[in-house]
Image (cartoon, rainbow, N blue to C red; front, side, top):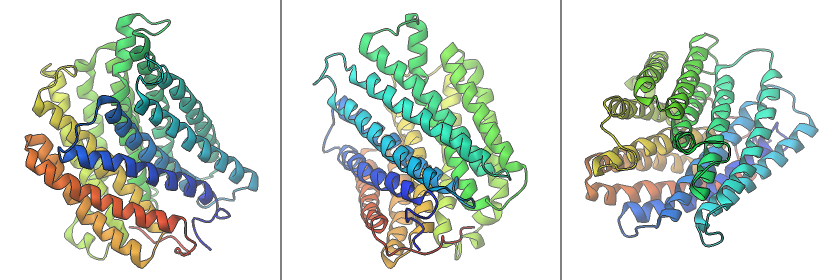
Length: 418
């Protein structure tokens, strides 16, 4: 029996979101390759669709797919819940596609771009719907799980970021937000990017790494990690909303570093040279963990800039913009893309996926390292070399995995990761 068969827990809903995520990500990648090679300078609306098709179309749909698998693992799932999950999956796909198209349309439909907050609100409603299911599924388990807790907290953080996103859409559309003064509205709008990249994605990334590497660990350390990260994300949100980022960014960063060091210590044997030999598909969460370290280092640099008040987000220097882009791509590709393919690789095994995995391990991760170095050092030739390597590797793997998602010839049992 296929582990992505509709009758197997909520794998049918996961198949829907992973398949849609893969198709949407191809659009993201093509823009990224052309832009990274400096052969095309997309206009702002296209770039915004590129960003949101990556963070929502690829990552958030993928996180939803992981949640359907994680929160149905080891428990009986009724036919009614399977149907509801499938409906939620299709609703999330539809809302994400509409939201991405709203960015791509720019002012070609409405001059004030009002479609963005409208479809953002639709997506917000679907996110709430899934959160209700998250809570119910989480409570259905008798034993606690740090990974499930982390993914639940990550989805709550996504909801917070979605609120800021709708406010940002209203603010850019009307120049004001009903019920908020201009300064408060601007701060809420500014809080959207950090709420998503730090508050949401960092918690979600940790949760999936926890699931893939430490799911059999009953200790408290995993739970402590998740709460530290969630609280840190809340502090970051408060910092930007209140304009106290110089005072609060440092303490939040310390909590994130503490969580990162805890996970590194717990994973130390897996990261040793002997831990990589014969690791198979478990290389994916190991690569993700390495990029989590890079992400936290870059975040610490950004926080130091904020504390010393040497960065203006509305007037970035070329080197500052490069570091910010490297920071984002480290999370989007280095962490989240590795863990998402890590989950797929444990469920879909074939000679083609084995080849795709090798292409991902080396083409994507080395490509990302070179691309990020080019961004940080503002060396154009590095970006032009490594962007197509990373992008082509991702496209090949996506085609292979999309084929396997639509095929019945898949592994009958998950591959053991550890």
